[in-house]
Structure formats: C-alpha cells, structure tokens
Length: 355
Image (cartoon, rainbow, N blue to C red; front, side):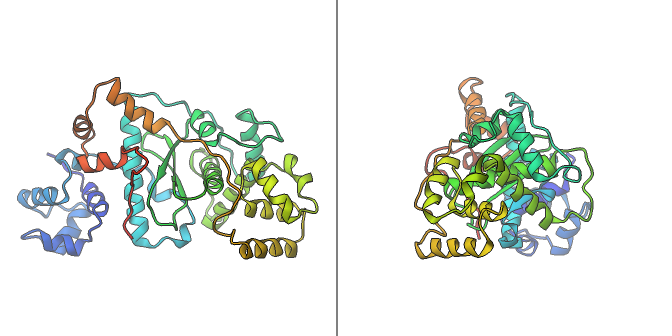
C-alpha cells in the first residue's frame, strides 16, 4: 500500500503530539527517522509504520489520501493573538472540516458559488461590497438580516466552532474541491459573529477565489484592513447609514444597532471613518462603553439566523441514504471519535481546540 507521508504529519498534529513525544511512544522509532519519514523518505519498516498508524488511531486508508484544503493560505481573523501551537490545532480542525465538506458533496449538491470575486487592485473593498449587496438583492438602505442564509444560498458553506480559544474569531479557505468555507467561533455575540462572517466573505471575494494575482506588496495587514472595510460597507452601506451618523450621540447607538444588527463599537468606527464624528468623539464613546461595561458584552442584543447546509448534508446521508455513523466513518476513512465530534449538532456539541 502506498502511503502519503504528509498524512502522518496531519494525523500527528491533529492528535496534538510532537515528533519527540511520538518517537518515544513507538518501539524502535527515533525522532530523526520520524522526521525523515514525514519529509517523504522511506526509512521506516512496515511494522513501525503500522505501529504509528495504530497509535495515532486513524484508519489505514486515511494515510493514502491527500488532504490539503489550502489551509496554508487561510485567512484567520484576529490571527495576531493565536500562538503557533493553537494555529496548528486550528489548521488540523479546519482541514478535517474541509475534507468532510467535500466528502458530503460527493452525494449532496451544494448551492453553486454565485458571488463574483473582484480584484482589490482594481476595485476598492467598498466597491466590492456594494456590488455583492446588489448581486444578492439587497437595497442600498437595507440591513443584512439573515446573513447565514445569504452566504449559504450563494454557495458559501458556514460552520460554527464551539468551545475554542477566544482569540479565534473566524477563518475562510477553499476546500480541495474548491468549496468556499467559513468557520466561526460560536461563542461570541451575534453582532460580532455577523462582522466576522462579513469579514471572511471579504477575504473569499478579494483574496481566495479569484483568478487574479496576489501581489507581494499586499501583505496580511493590508488584506485584514481590506476585509474590515468590506465588512463595514457590506453590513452598514454608506448610502444608507451616513446621514444617521452625523452628530452621532450615545443615545443613537442602541436604535442604530437594532436596525443594522451590528455592534455599537462598529457603528462608532463607521461614524468616524465616514466623518460623521471626529476621532476624539469616537474615543469618548469607546470610553463611555467601557464605563458602562459594554466593551466586551453589549447590552442590546441582535438576531442572527443559523447555518444549515453542513448539517443538512449530514442528515441527508443518515435519513435518505441510510448511512449509519459507522458507515460514514468507514466511507470517509476517519476515526469514529472524529466523525462524532464534527457531526454532533446538539446544543452541547463541542469542537474543542486544546490550548
């Protein structure tokens, strides 16, 4: 059987074990030979390879696959606060998610990706956002209410993570089959999730899916800024909100939040960026939110809908195609514990990243 050495790296990182510790667990395995093996050298005996497979507890067929999902170029929101070790764990989780999205897609048709990527070298983020709003049928003054529905009906698969580090907001990437995916932290407030979804959509349209080149001078900091600008215009279009921001007061924040379904803090930043208020006034508002205990959790709640495509694809396999979870585990060449982790849709489901 021909093994893909990179899959051993994948399985080891998913299990959260380093080369040194793993080599100590396998009799006759040195870290030097493990390192060479993971780099593609055939230095291990068949017995040691199968000892590795048994210890990592993945099906043998898993190690013949090639799961990539472009995680190396994935766009993490709030990436600066994520340590290398946590990012490795997040990458492993996201690779599994991308793989499952593709495996389900073999039997289930997802909505076509019908949004249009635009080159940020030719269009501003605001222009991309306005074009996208028009494409999905939103009026210039209309808030984005059912944001999950808009994304998924246009071919973006969205999945919520539960019980992950609070330094992770969200990530966007393409699966090996080209499905655009957004993964977000379920634990945050609805207004924060909305901005994260819009931010990651900006990455997909400007930095992930287009055939246009990505110049070297456009670094991650610039891409993050572009995604933020896209999100602000997508959720709070200047044409619709600008007049409401002139002379903005603290008392205006709650009703504006209820209408636009965005956080008070994002409204304050929008007012500053659109020159509805000066910077010192925006700073004063932020200080007041802190004084009222609303910098981390704002008092005014907003609605958000739920993602359904990933869950529906799984349930179709179970109910219509008569797969058991054991069948899916075998069909997808994944351990049963991993399958249950990602397909547990109860309110208490946990997709855990150890930190």
